[in-house]
Length: 540
Image (cartoon, rainbow, N blue to C red; front, side, top):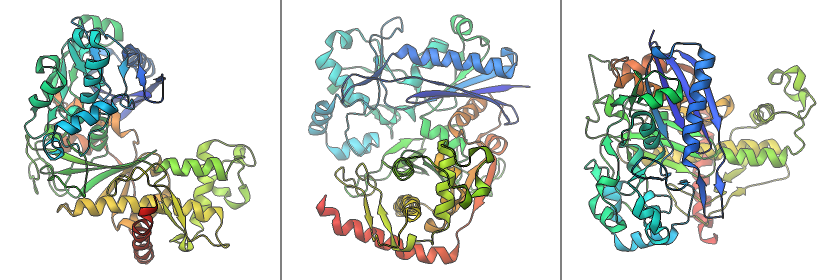
């Protein structure tokens, strides 16, 4: 039996999943870590923290699974994007990693924006704005403010690059991870020399670029000794976490997209070519992680009968739609409308475990109660509509000053109406993203839903009714680390191709089909939702 490891290095936690060659999950381990917030602009973390978390996860997986490390064929790491790590000639970090949340380089972002045409930036990098998030701005900040670090830096790495180096001793990155650095040309697949010159670094200070799902090397003796893994285990290039999650969700076919309703709303849509620059639609475009499959396949296709080929090995991209606030609004609602965390068991006995009734409860139990109460409210929330822009609006409006608005409140509305209106508002945002994508000629029939929102049957049905698309949930909800494990298997030939891998690893749990009667109600509510925003936008 061969085993595969997928590691997901997130912003505040790292997760590792072990699967077997048939796609079955063997075990999952996780490790949390704290960020260092020195001011409202500065967010850092010791780079060594990622390596310590990685080793702890490996130790946990080996302990839980009891398998022989020699049986782990390969490992692949995905990570958050943009977090910058500066290392010296020995590969040792020169300072704390600058986390993507860090905004110290706002002035440098403005400087880049003023010196480069925005259309050229987008056409080169796929990024529709220049923000302090991007590593290019942080390197320019280092050049101005920490010259001693800037002059000593041998390599500028992202989190996935750093772990790859610690495992293999080689500096290798992948195209999807570096798509938001602002110094990678997504069309040419190489570093963008003009901006490197502007920020003052060279290509030699950056890792070697590979596609996702490509072998880097086996473990060094030191890495094997530190982790407990076999030195014969092969390290395979991973991906940006969003791209790995798309693969783990089975988002590899035409007409299929994936969406994640967590704190924010994120939608991943695979496309054939980068979209043209537009003042109206500022949508991030990344290289995706599907270079390992050579083609997107129609759902009716197979390894021997590939139909509806959309992209080839050198032309694979994804649009990343996002909205700042989604599930976090329901969290806000829970904290304020259910302040005492009391569960009224007489309303919803079938959803609440016996030992939880009438007590202060866990979040999951409270959300069950909210679901139960919201399900009793009519579709359309009896005229109550939410504009869910609690932290500004993103695609397609891009207004950082936007605020949340409940419209149409009457004396007949209850707190359950507000819960349902929140769920419906996220459905409206999802529909806006889908309509924007379809405006580029992309046909969408099926949505793979991820994140905490996917746990709610009510929310899934609302999304299906609003979008008119089939909503699918998955048995394995840890799709990001699963996606990395799949890449490990593809890179080492354990899986024949991406379709073979997803058929074995990605298992559908439930399907939600649009309800025609509800769809008619939501059509009217959705049009009103858009009109409300346009009517009050000037007030922000």
